[in-house]
Image 1 (tube, helix red, strand yellow):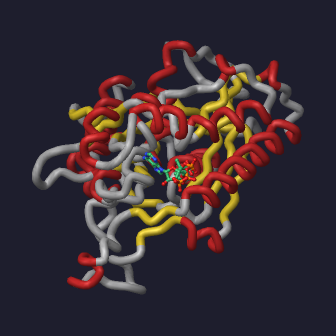
Image 2: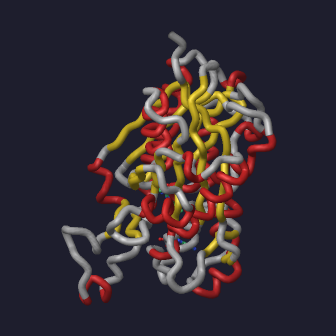
Length: 331
Ligand code: UT7
């Protein structure tokens, strides 16, 4: 019997219109365009404005764009997984809200939180549902309103993050294309370096937690940086080696966009020239679970059927991993 594989058959995105550039940011905190460009590599990021708007609005926008682009009916979607660390609310899942806003009525849906590796982990999960033969039209969406948890008085974190959403359609194929192999890892001991202190069951929201600014991202940049460089590169290289892939075989590395220096280090460890490393951090910053689909969307026209891509991520948890896939279509 032919093995069923899962392939990405389309990409949709939704980006807020408002652009927060380094000049404007420099008026909010003590920083400069030069520092941000040298240390992180971000020029501007998108911010979702407007009362009552949340990650689901961006997620639904990306899903509607995807359905239109792929000529898919909302009623044909069977499963939607939303990767996010900025859900609309603690419950219900943002995935349920996205389905409602996008008119998806015949699916089950749930959220998955794996920090900046959320999209990768959700893609891995969705792949198994498709490979098993159980489902034929599955959407994976990364949707983040990071500006809702960024402290715009903290110069060490506020330049990094941006808002945005991207979604992919996953369908079964019987050719040797689609998701080929994956390595996924997590280490909860890393939580001390990157987390949100209050608002969960350990420390429910109170006047005191708000006064102490504990609902924002807490990040110790350097330990996160070190772990990101070594783990993201190690897993990507391990995935290449165990599949006998050399740098020549790879069309693109699709790396999580957290810091240009982490992206460069990962590409170098894989022996890839710069032109084989997807980058759009300068335009959108770190959109957490949305970085990978935003990259696929930005580079979609350059991709050809059969191209080998390595998706690699690192994020809060700690979580990290890599997926090898063969691109499934020409645009
Ligand atoms: O996506 C989830 C995973 N997250 C990551 O992968 C992030 C990993 N970490 C990083 O990307 C980097 O650690 C940061 C971008 C967060 C920080 O860069 P860094 O090179 O590690 O800087 P640092 O924290 O060591 O700070 C160096 C200096 C400090 O000043 P002193 O103590 O040397 O006088 C900071 O106060 O830079 C200062 N600094 C700034 N200066 C101007 C920190 N932020 C800023 C700023 N503008 N925005």
